Image (cartoon, rainbow, N blue to C red; front, top):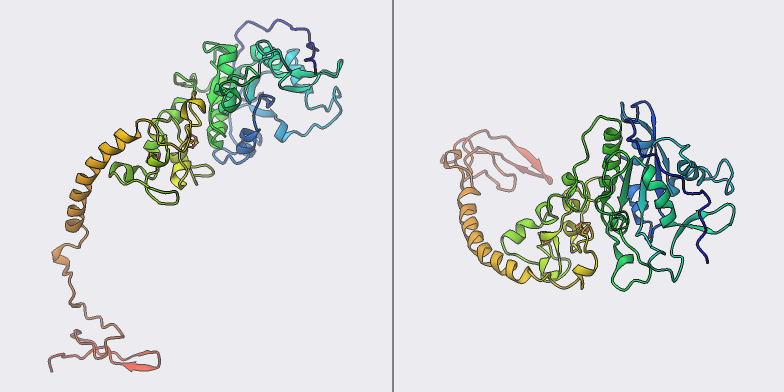
Length: 394
Ligand code: SF4
Ligand code: SF4
């Protein structure tokens, strides 16, 4: 199959910096899921809760532009190619500078026929004139220079991911590798990368909301780290937010899957992986790989997957770090058990002890041997019990 010649003659993109989108205006979101991927990021985003997709498209946030989404997984137009109800029409209009301000979202690794011309690897819709698929690279070439911001969603789109593994035949790569790591949009925004295989849903919905504020002039430039990830999401490591980090610190490690302790010896990369999933959970705060027993395979990292395989082997540094925390943990555990013995107890002035001196008589203790007052008969299982002898010595 031959890649199509561009239907739209490449029009020079506007070069001047655009004004902020009016808070009562409309911002379009053009989602190209035509990279090499499983569409898992689109599926994951439907589970976002904070904010949810419904809140984003339903105008739940005051004072930000209305978001109009052109996303294959949530598409209402179903008309014929080239018709006014055609899903792709918005994309064609964007290329012709007729759509209005928009953010381009790319999902999937970018296959590149220019360096791997043995095939046509992925496309998005067909050229109405030739009937041939429009390659993914052509869409990026046409839309990226016109977008106010470009968002790469998922590890395939950000860094290449699984389709870009060594020896892949497609030339697949992440968006910053394709556009250049120093690329900026018309509005001066670098490529925003939200990695994950798949993405943590709220990470993406939150970034979309942030861009709505930023592009309408109500928030500063989105803070990104050296791998173009939002700093507030990808600063801490998975290990720092993990429910099992207390076991790691005390040197207690699972030997088999299903055990509740730290799974680093089973292959967890959490201590060196920038990811907020253990802290944030997967859906509505629930789950999060190592929290629920899965090893962290470093899916948010630019080197994933090649640099982290084979997945089930302990990471190279794990032997040293677990030996260290094993020694430290043995000492600290001993001290903590000692402290527990002292502090897991009521203070003496609350009169703790085996002898019951409160006046309460357990119903199974016929005669109320230790009670000192208040003889009240109680009925239990058909037997009559006397609650206390007013004078146990008499
Ligand atoms: S399971 Fe992984 S992330 Fe959690 S404490 Fe252990 S090494 Fe760290
Ligand atoms: S905890 Fe590890 S495997 Fe899970 S999403 Fe984060 S980086 Fe990926």
